[in-house]
Length: 579
Image (tube, rainbow, N blue to C red; front, side):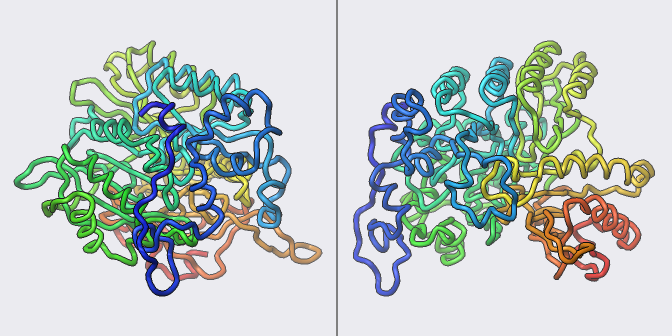
């Protein structure tokens, strides 16, 4: 579908049915498409895809003040644009101010990669955009997106032109749409891969990204597709996931998972129980998203994610509706994925099936920037590598490295601040955008996490060196309750909030965190995903964070049973051991 087509078409509206008795949930196929709130009204008046033409022909020429409110705070998201937070507004005022009062005249711009391999040319374009238009900013998100800040509306058309010249886009990177896909970073090259998801991702993108029929969903819709046995796309927390499995009779294909999501009402996805052949995987994805569009709850936005529909229906009904109303045929039963075979971040040096190598490297909490991206392009060309992919863990993976170039690559990555041999905490710590740019945030995250990593590397060097700390401990830092950094599925998850502490002159409010413990997704150390626990009264200030993590890690090492992971210990430990 071309860009011109996406600008002119109207949003889809299924045939109206009589509303059911009782209060409507705004399900189009049950209650009819009559909007039940202001957000649904403007989406039906004109979809978000249409705003691109106005950005290019009006707003970029006339400037920020020419943008009407509904486009600025609504439709812009369909093209990956959010206004960023004004500097200097402290976290205690986040909930007190309106969006307009919190918003600056600059934008965050989100670029989707969808598991795509980035060539040196693409990396240079990404680096140049950062340097020329974004004050050097660029962050790898935990959804394989690249996010810029300080973007001015006048520069957006030129940024789009440059991105599209290397096959990248911001189409439906935000908004009530099919957002960027998570794809295996080692698709097509890993020696132990079950199935290469690249053809499925490309087919879905070609047929449906930018399609106005899918551009008015109840809320956002997140996709993950992998064929690697490390389960490297966090499939348990996406709206829809296709996970590589081998059917005993039908061979390699996919297991379908539906209804995952975190935020303030976390819920893990469930297996639907079907086996999806490669040739029908795109159609199955399409059926799932159509179910969400037609049956998803639209009356209340805080109940509008697919996870709430699945909670009401259950997997058996969901399968029945998918097969009978959307596919028109049954799907075979299928096996679940095997336990993960290794870490899904792919950090380190690994041999490819063609004899070359892929090398996973860790920036600090996803932060890169223009010089890093441009330097990475030069480096991979120098060593004879060809491509780079981003990961679901704020990391990157260099593909197709010849053995003769490994030493130089690892050395060059270190020079760029990208280490292929990170300390345990540099490897496993993630952080969302935080108060630096995000209007929802209450506390700083990136700098707080980076400082904590440095401190923990120093303080816990002894237990790393002697091998006592023999299990990874995931530390996820989030600036608000919305869990962009997946706090409920971390060993130690930190939810930003204002914490009241005793000061010399009475109670004092400081930036801090509520602590979640013992969560996790399926990994080599953990067969099944699970949400973490909270301990009543367990909060730490940002300044106390390294103290707390050091204390709880040392307590874990002293009191765990043999073979326990941190999560296993934290879920069963006495409250006092976790304080």
